Length: 358
Image 1 (cartoon, rainbow, N blue to C red):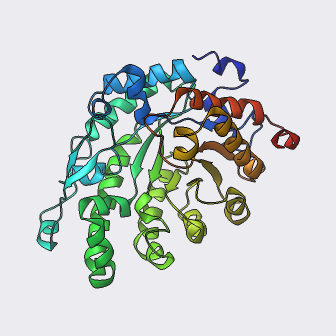
Image 2 (spheres, helix red, strand yellow; image 1 turned 45 degrees about the vertical axis):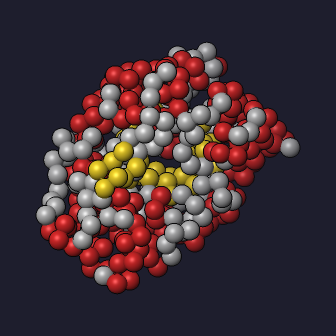
Image 3 (cartoon, rainbow, N blue to C red; image 1 turned 180 degrees about the vertical axis):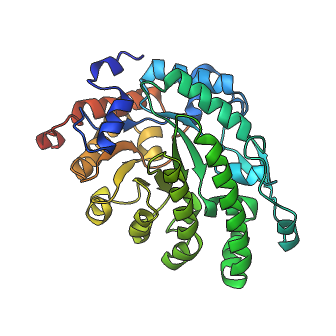
């Protein structure tokens, strides 16, 4: 374990479990979810981390030794459900996977699709194997998660998102059929992942309030998210976190209505506003600026940004987790990662001393 971790009174797993269950804990959790940045630590290609559970685990071990991570996990990726259903992906050596060929190009393509093998399709086997290794290595002290893409995001990776948005008006029944398929596929995979000692999280960036309206979210995202959340809870995994990119202010209450236990919010929104609106219902996660602060800024900028987040959210009724507002930039300077966790240790002690934020 990192020397920094030894300065804490609780392990990351003890801390997050205490906060979730309303028990006393030592300081604010700091979700340094390293992701693809791990490749830079071990001198690997990012693409390697999508296929080799050994390299993925090696990267997380190296990240923990270097930074003292407080969470770890693996995901099939935002296009992972679509990949399992037939979309063809590209895996850059230094970037996130993206769709090269959509599994659905027209209505007839949908007729040929069915729920795939939840263990073997796409990279499901890789994710399950990697999650098991992460649990074996970290599970006693660090929470391990498996993140799945939300149904609207999966639909937009199975068929071009522009066409999805068009058909929400021209052919809504067709969109609902796609959403039904990706939701059933996601649930089948979750049932396999839930056999491991992991929590489940949901990333639903395409359902952003900057992309779809409140009404569209209510019709095409909310019912399927509720179904997935209910499944996760029924499997004994607790309430998952839900991340949606962009300006989500107009759908905060709907996000909470999904039954998610925590909302991960982008840096374009104000945490204090979110606290006032849904803070009595959900844990808030976020929202240090990933690019402007973590990637392009200096440690002093990271500390300032973290302090501002803490100042606004330290007293959130359901709890608060210091984290980035969105994905972790691959080339984030190591000194900025140290600064983020250092700010959590320095300013996030319970009980809080608000004068530290001045």
